[in-house]
Image (tube, rainbow, N blue to C red; front, side, top):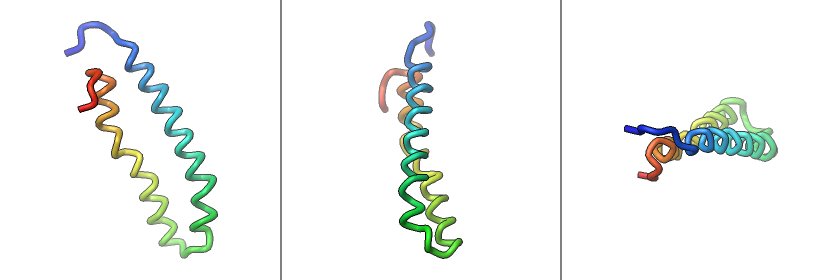
Length: 71
């Protein structure tokens, strides 16, 4: 259990916000050019995939924010 506040949490939140903004901008900029002519159902699957894929590294990132270790 953490006894003292650390700078990892505010730094981690700021880093997460910046990373998600960059990720969102990249997805919004490049994915429509690729899937824009596809059927709406196929586009839905692609955007659902990209909307959920960012969650994969989130667990380790949150562990780092709390403990300072990546595992």
